[in-house]
Amino acid sequence: MYESYDQPMITRRAFVVRLVKHFVLTLGILFVWLAIGVAGYAGFAHLKPVDAFLNAAMIAGGMGPVDILTDDAAKIFAGIYAILSGVVIIGAAGVVLAPVLHRVLHALNLDDSDGDGQPG
Image (cartoon, rainbow, N blue to C red; front, side, top):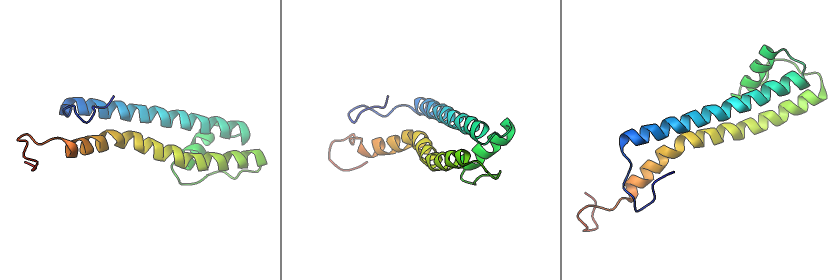
């Protein structure tokens, strides 16, 4: 998927396409994670879909729950969902940043063109 050390850097257009693909993948990951949260809040806390969405989105965004949970199963789900939401958000950020960081590191490791060992 990425060019190796001995390959030239991809074009700017190809890089933008790579960024868009990573962004779409990240949106998919976040959509699935949010759907899991909505299903959990609807199932365990017996919330309406809109309220379940609001709670899942607020937890995933790091803001905290909106509704008061009275059922122990709902509280356990909310706690686990909150802990794992941090991991998912950090992982999603890594997916988006990976192409940028790879391009920077690849640019720093490119051989110089005149072969004298000096940059530029």
